[in-house]
Image 1 (spheres, one colour):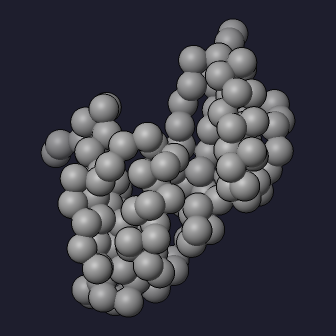
Image 2: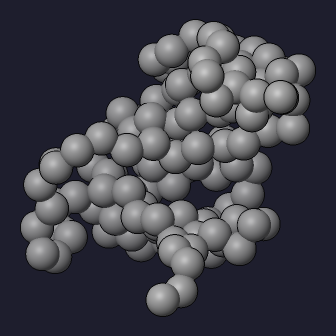
Length: 122
């Protein structure tokens, strides 16, 4: 079995979400249509944004999920927190220390959780 290399988020308006993620990631999507947008990330991972109104088979919420951004250190987390806060991106969890590291959680336009963290140093 191969490792996952693609995540799809179901969104209300793919074009609006594509603008949000283009600004957030600092890159343009490699594909945009009225029902789908896709980003190719430097890690090789792909991020897809699919209209929740056209996905087949129909998707119903079954649980929560997060898109996680691992950063090098606490200073990088602080800097991104200030940047995203200044942009008006909603923050669901302010800066905090948890057992896995230093973190905060922001929300995209469809309220998908965006966790930013620096792993705990042991």
